[in-house]
Length: 482
Image (tube, rainbow, N blue to C red):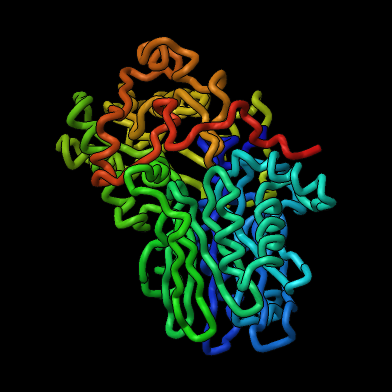
């Protein structure tokens, strides 16, 4: 399986695979700096590696300038490098690995040179038939440079381009071979293309800044650069931004909307709280989750606090519904970069305290309701409850703004195998409560999820074991490396 990222290692959270950003400036302006700021806004979607690739649509056809490296956007790109990247069209990527090793060779965007020119591709998602597609290519002579499913997608697009009239048709045909979750941004010499899987697992949207068009994972990236939100890319849609400023749409891969399976964890945890995905506010969703918890699992207490950052919205909703004051109990250190030494299990307590510290004055002598978005393995929940009690909290009541994790995810979320999941390993909520040391524990009810997102069709597979499409017969996440 793929290793944990820094935040996942310390906070025992699911990891999202990545964020994508593409832009085409029809006025010919350089776009690298805009991609940088867009990726900075998407950094929460992946802190393992990042990259930018740009090209000049009116320059030498097929010339692409790119840079990829391990670490954060602010660490890998400085002003000198950004100024050296000339081009009016480009794509960017931030990555957290769910498939393939954590290494520089697996950083994106991928850049391919082939008989029809060049392609640069950024991918968010996970293909459950990636090994099958990869083997088919290998037995016809393909040589792979990475261990990620994104390269399999890029190869199939390149092959389809040899027998199609244009690159967008090649993307559409290649997408039909994919099984799983994908949101793609593809740069060709004269076009910017976005594609989303038919189930809509992962988000993708379109924006406009002056005379430049953007395709990206979340609306917060549009807000950061001052762009106007145009619309979401629809499940199964392939959109193409052409040099005359048209947005062409191909819906030939679409399925009935009743079959869609938007990832509920985008709203619970992954997405930034200031984003809107498929017409639903992430902020509103988290406020609703907290209110539902207050309605369904009330408890007498003095203060409601959230575990930052994703627990804060639900904590505010709980406070609003219950009438118990909302407060801040944790100080999170946001300045720990890639040079932070990954801890051993024996030093996990100290490592968590490096990134998260309790404000003693806020909790001492008080009954605390602590809201968090999930419990995965349970290690961090136990540590944080203990930290609150060591700081003098009289009681700690834990409320989780999602149902218990009982199944892994195969569609771009790095939820571990069942045997590692706290809720699967214990037969009751009471057993979990006892293990984490809380005075009480309650999860969000399954039937509350639909209300969180205003009835949007969602995937609940990690809670129910029922996915919008058949999962693979065996879990191959992370098994690409030879």
